[in-house]
Amino acid sequence: MHFDLILKNGTLVIPGTGLVDASVAVTGGRIAALLAPGQIATAVRVIDCKGKHVFPGVIDPHTHIGFGAKEADFLTESRSAALGGVTGMMTFHRSDDLALSTGPWREAGEARSIIDFGFHFGVTSRAHVETLAENAARFGVTSIKVYLMYKGAAGAAKGFGEVDDALLFRALQAGAKIPGAVVGVHCENTEVIPVFREPLREAGRDDLKAWDEQSPGFLETENVFRVCWFGEKTGCPVNIVHMSAAESLDLVRRLRRPGRAPIHVETCAHYLSLSHDDASGSLAKVNPPLRSQSDIDALWEGVRLGEISTIGSDHVPRKAATKEGGIWNASAGFPGIATLLPVLLDEGWHRRGVGLDVLAAATSANVADLYNLAGRGRIAPGYSADFAIVDLDGETLVDPDQLESHSDYTPWAGRKLKGAVTATVLKGRLIAEGGKILPGIEAGGEYIFRTAGKA
Image 1 (spheres, one colour):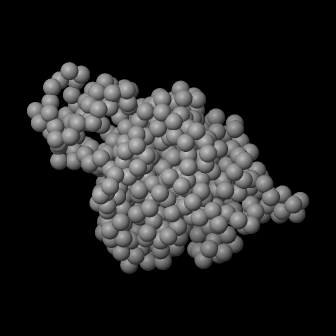
Image 2: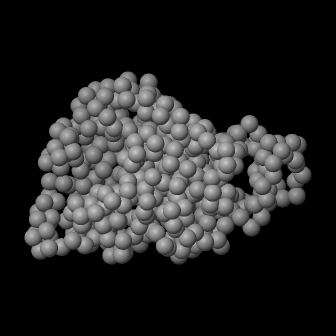
Image 3: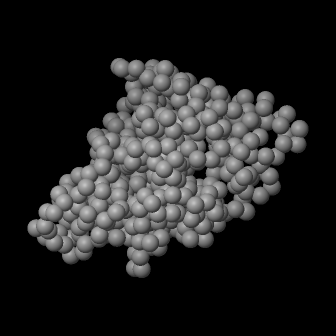
């Protein structure tokens, strides 16, 4: 047997199943076979993975490409992603006219990204809802996001005047009619936030914890109920994106039951590792806010039990200069795509004993299933040969200067995370090794066009 590539002697991390000692053989960019220990085969290239764990390439379900240097983000952020074992990223695309903008934005990505990428549509107007089915079919986008944080005055400040409960309900009605669709929602009750924010500002508070106190967890939970209830009434699968609060997960547990439309839950690496007491201050400002240690612990239990099915980065590649002016004026969001897997290895596997297969499922197979990313997210014959090779005993010293992002900071800067990505393989091609993008690796990422069906 002769192949293009063999990853030899590694321990394969099979999402949702466990660990298998085997070699992976690749031909034509796809997994051709799993070889038992001692099974003889040859290849054009052999990578010895002895002592290493081979994960499916990470698929980050939650990124914001274009928020840093516009289309140039596709290059910098895909390179940053590859350093962390990310071989695919789903990013939110939002514009007044999705029919006009999506094609050019896809072309911008294809011309620059070194990893595969796909889109979620941001829905902020009734016109978006009315053209959703047409644009979903035309551009292969079966996931959308509704921003409840942009209701009322908060939305008007951003130029969005149509975000309300009616838009949410219409979006869910439309999503229910699109095969394989899922509607993700940012849950925060921004109409109540001023009740808490104004006294905090009057008291002179300017700390990271104040950002949590001005939008406490129950304001997320209240919106979670509305989304799930409307999802049940419309028959539309919903996804609570970037869940941050323990009580939100408790509510979802009570609302899930057989016979109703699914309720999916995503959280992010920062809600699993950073609290509102973090020393990064305004650098760690994000929406929804960072919460307490008890929220972190509760969300990890949800990951362990599979109640939280996907984990993303919510990567926003802005500069540190946008974080100036104190907590009330700093921009929200921060970079995290390169550190996604290292953070989960450190916090999940090493500190809490969460299974490697559970982490792999939440960052690959479950993402592929939820978003209909056919042929991705698993280590099995016929699947795309995308891998993150990991040294569990290695160390990741987080240095923003080495992460290749347009952004020049990270709230994890200076931290030593146990667990390191030593190499990244995309469709059978080694693209990163030893913390560096290999010479000659240029744009070659594929746009992920999706249709209904399971991965």
